[in-house]
Length: 283
Ligand code: KIV
Ligand code: NA
Image (cartoon, rainbow, N blue to C red; front, side, top):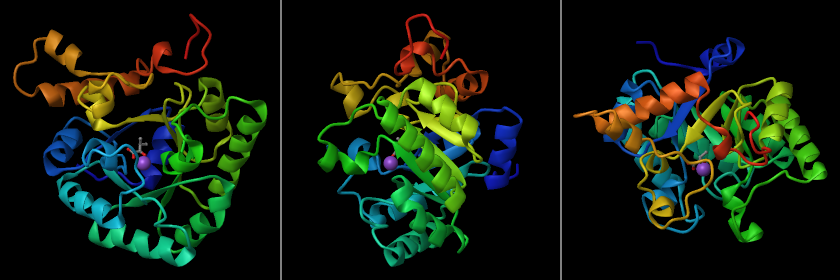
């Protein structure tokens, strides 16, 4: 088994093969995800919510991400490992470089992810020219929760949509090797992807992107949000399907493999997982 890298992800996009991504935070799930065919594993700062139990991602530190990356990285034979740069860990060029160095050298990440639009372009370029692959996270940016007040769909107004399209272009030109779009109208996700020179991963960004990502605990139906009845629209619980098929051992691995299969076939996301699609429309 050969490990995936950035060029491979680009080839998948060119070949029209959807990229299946999933978060992981420990060795047990890292192994299962790698075996189930997940292409990209993310150490997301969502760990502040699904592992540490907070209401936001802002308390997460570089130490936290390194800690979980160290648990995951050694168990990925094929999957490509991305780690989130947490809140304010890339507030200056120096801090961005320092934080990225730790995520890659200590954590074993092969790419770092940061939130923000064109205002992050100088940081993306600074990292990229030094050999740090960067994923730029646009749309809903959970690290801005204390400015936004609530997590909500982004890019619904024309001006915001145009600004996001422009941000995507600027970030790719600055050297971003991957874009991630969170919680935006499906049509905007497709437009940004069509105009992007690099692969685009979506979460709640419709089916017209190059790949999908979910938070592991959402896919398993056990995240605090799901348990408390606040399941986001884009979330699909893959456990009932695996149970219904009569999977005996390896239920969780089967559920993850189902997710990978549905991302590859385009069955996920279905219209009910997408924002701003007219009833009956194809995603
Ligand atoms: O932190 C995270 O898990 C993420 C994904 C939701 C994209 O950023
Ligand atoms: Na994140």
